[in-house]
Amino acid sequence: MAGLFEIQTDPKNTRYVVVSGARQKDEDWDPEENGRFAIHGADTEGKAGLADPRPEALQGVSDHYGNDPYALSSLVRKRFRVEKKIEAQKRAEDDTLKGKYGLPEDLKLIENDAEASTRRGMNGRGLEQ
View 1: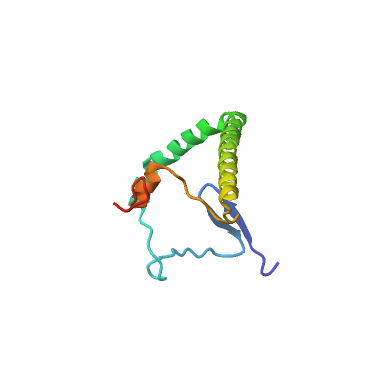
View 2: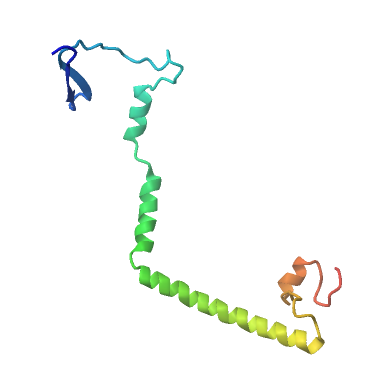
């Protein structure tokens, strides 16, 4: 039986053990010699011991919003229906105004409120202040 050798795994030590037919060559790999960064055990052990509060907070938020997806979905649908009615009402008012004054259909009308006019730098009469 020339050229046969037997190797077994050692899961406890995460190594391979040569049982027969060969000699094991023990070689330690040095990352600094091979152009890699060395991993320092003290830094990684210190960080592993600290618990990051962010994943726990995210899990809490996920649990809060994921408890009853039907209730959340119905709330979102209800809010969407209300917003849709408001938009339809605004669109109908705009269409009435466009029809009354003969404005083009593709003209986009702006909101008529005091806050919007002050943002544009005008007073209530459309004059600059």
